[in-house]
Image 1 (cartoon, one colour):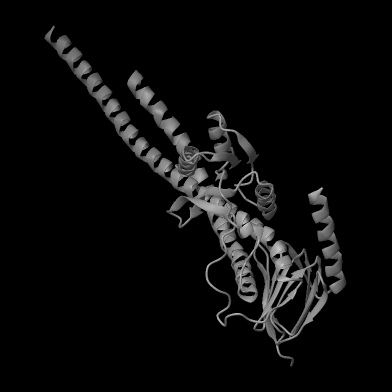
Image 2 (image 1 turned 90 degrees about the vertical axis):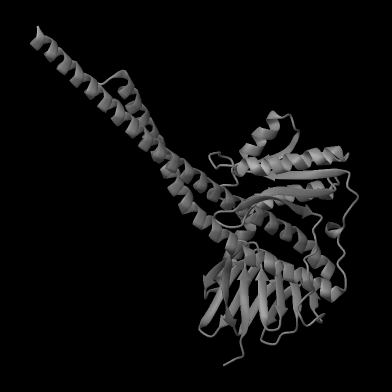
Length: 292
Length: 109
């Protein structure tokens, strides 16, 4: 009969193994989705790049860029947007971006600036709500597979807040997808829009024909630009989330494997010890009988 | 064969069409525009409507939901948040554009 110790070890092995099945499945799912998410990031780049071109060309053609969305105001209120995931089990993914954002919040407070907080993802919502922060707006269910409509919805609300003067500057705290192994949380200034670097096409100012006027084109273009940028931010955050989850689940699976190996060894030792005890008991008993 | 120029239709999701064309017609906010090779540099705001591209092997039409058009050095770039390609048929593209417009109006309600 198996001893209590052996039974307990076997029960733990079974439990670790079933956890391992879950983490391995999650790892595989994340791996499958990361490729798709990364591809979407890559495919979204030309749009923003072309928009930057257009803005640069307008700047080159009209000499200067003047638009309310380009103008920095004196900062009394800061809009802070935090982008996290809805689900956990992604290692330090949510923790690092939340830490970065909260650090900024504390700094803004210390500098006497008022704050308006916007959150994307359930993790940020729960975190900041628990800490009694006032949250102006929250978006859930967008970071897993963001659509352009999600980006547009968020951008429009943020833009309205800025245009209404509720905030003087809007900054986004999000995670940038650097590579499969590296995702860095970072601050992304969203509003006012920073005019793209560099001059227009290399030939210098060209005689563009504008239909309608450059101002009107900028008027129409900038909100779209903001939507595109926001969409890009969501896509990168989503790719980062899947990459972080894959890494976390891979580590968990490896830990479980290691643990199973150790536990199996312990179980074998316990079994061996039991057999040894039984044999010595039998031998001892037989000797006692023979002597008697 | 007519002289060709490069055309890209770019949406936030992807570059949905890219190739050489002989002629492009599109609807801007100011009116319809027809583009041939060596067009002067132009920047225009697109209205929701159909875009028609004639290339060496036939024609392509796309329903486009607003956006921008840039012509520079024989490259035409159409930037739009939504576009759908239809092979060949302009009427089909017009119908699609109307659908896109309706969908957009439905969303903003």
